[in-house]
Image (cartoon, rainbow, N blue to C red; front, side):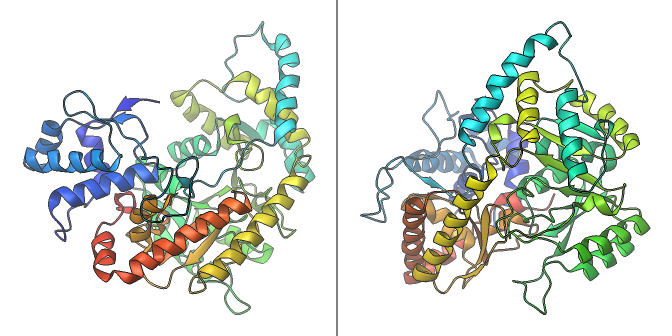
Length: 487
């Protein structure tokens, strides 16, 4: 959706952008470019005028003009009336620095981890929803809690997984991100601490910061082994006891970005510690259905009624549904509904009716989808082993992404360079706070094997260019993604 960005909002996104390593106009242009590639600045958004941004940044207008000119030349800013160009992504049929690596439709997007709709199943669900719609038309159409049929279907799904649930314990939301914003508004005030795994889901970090809260990162261990568990529960328990965060946001089921799954023993211990410390556990289960290796665990809410669970159909069925939910005890749901009505008055009815059908037959499209993802995962891991053997790759047990450790801290440099090779990446620091994870890169295996091969070959070419030019590496690395600046 088109719009505009005011100078104050852009400055907040820029963070500490001026390191002094390069001319100011270069650093400003590089950081804006990364914000566009990260999705922090949407496409087709008008940037502030040169004069307004120069005044807000206390820079000369010449500096801002040079930065905008550089962005236009690179294709990240369209020409507009006066000095208000709109953000864009350059499209190249052949990457300029990698001849022979054709990208027919422009950039291969490795920044997003999403799948197309589950075909006929989703189509049929919407067709069925339209037959049920007439019965609801006499009503007002506002329902801050959610359509009863969907709430009952979600409750039945939890019950079948060993967590007895009623429809009164379910609040339907417009996706998992909407659910998290409702939870944050209800449970955490400004300057409250929110414990997060480190790394974690970038949009959750954005929501925590936007709510005025302080992310409290607890590092995940390096690639786990028989002696190194997937989560450092000792550190999490100690942090809860010492720091007393208002809530903790966790992704225990095929963690984004690592693909790990938390053991039942770890879940039980973590829930016990949270109850003792007064920290509300908020568990993101969006990826729980993408269980590639058949690992069996109970939902975290099986261990305590105080756990707040967030789910959606975005990863398992289709992000276009924009349907999610919160599961909690009835008293907590009442609080969430009160917070939700300040934000909106309910979700679209047809989508909820379709979602109810999909939840009722949740596993129907998953067998084929999981088999495809397993094939894609093996293709990606094999390609990385063949073309980038110096990269250390953690084998994901489920979900949609692999977490790769790079041989040097060049994640930002690769991200800046990637469009020249036909790729769009999300830099490792996007998944952390304080500039961490320059040694890491998240790669989704949602593309077909042929596209994954093209992407890995392009990554190899980009890595080779960095390795051949230490000065280029230093120049690109000096621009740290503003998205990871601590608020």
